[in-house]
Length: 260
Image 1 (cartoon, rainbow, N blue to C red):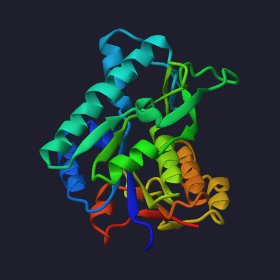
Image 2 (image 1 turned 45 degrees about the vertical axis):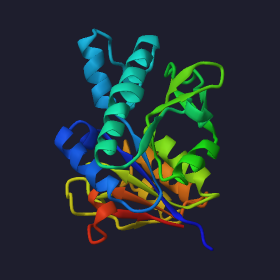
Image 3 (image 1 turned 180 degrees about the horizontal axis):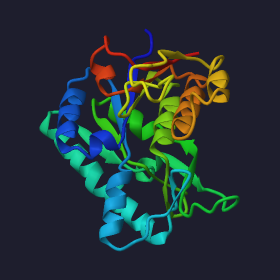
């Protein structure tokens, strides 16, 4: 018997920050058949809370500097309010879910990022994913919901890129399942022309990605998403899809597909 297909789905601010869009997405997600796992960010909510609390928000190249006060805020928002709100709404849609940080079930262990050339503070780089607890839950039809917080096995929580968490989970779970990774964001896919929202590149492979990067078609914030995607397909993830969340529920929508 072949491996079951597991969908690993990552949602970002465009869904999380719009309560109506979030409720619609979670209803559709709940109706998805088969094993699934959800990963969420929440950067804008963390920024809003930091400003309300008078904590300065520092960013370099689009990445948050996580000092000790910022770490408190992102843990409260990601592992607390956002994660539990998602889990509660999944329960309301008869989808049994459990919220996770990387510390729960010792599922994702990270290392604090080196302080040179830039000190990002309590930012974590993933170095180990343990799937035993996750597989137990998934096999009981329970859906894990991951926030963007991991730990270092020494009691320290770390702020960790949600795209990376989704990619690393899909890679680790590919040993047991045929994994598909979906990055949902506000565009309908990776665009050939940033000024033309319909110029979707439908297929990217490890063979043509360098040319797209050299020609600056893929750049800035899209770069880490694509690097995570290529890393995933190079490590036995069946396919990666980038686009609006509709791509998961409607096969006739346009999106970008990344395969070997």
